[in-house]
Length: 137
Image 1 (tube, rainbow, N blue to C red):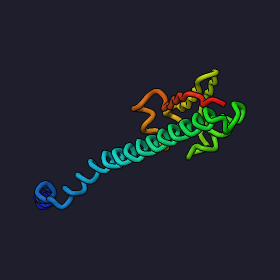
Image 2: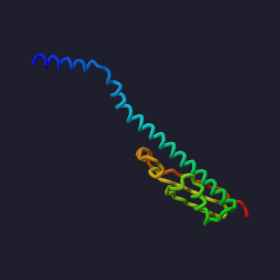
Image 3: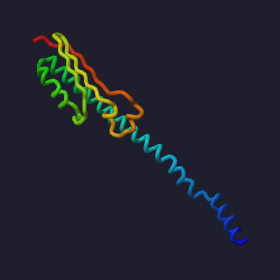
Image 4: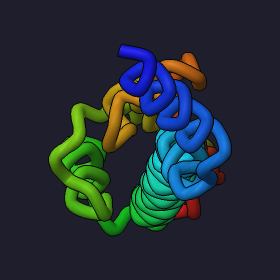
């Protein structure tokens, strides 16, 4: 029995002094943090690309409406076709006055994200609003 206790004691000391598993512990601690950071970066980049697409499409639509290239009825479809990501549920508003054109596009951040990470940390919506003067007919 004494020999078994000595072997168990030596095993415990050997385990405590052994540093072979220290890199495994560091890997287990850091991997979720690094993966989360990478997912946030990818998600934020996707959202910025989506927002840039919204700005470009709304500016292009406002320009086409101000030049009388398209009618007010065709404006929303023109805007949806000009988007880079067409599968999103955009909220679109087009207002025409005698002298001005207003185009607004918005999308909730939860719908703009690829993963659920960004919608937890960034509430609200992405939006783009463009106004232009109408050219004379």
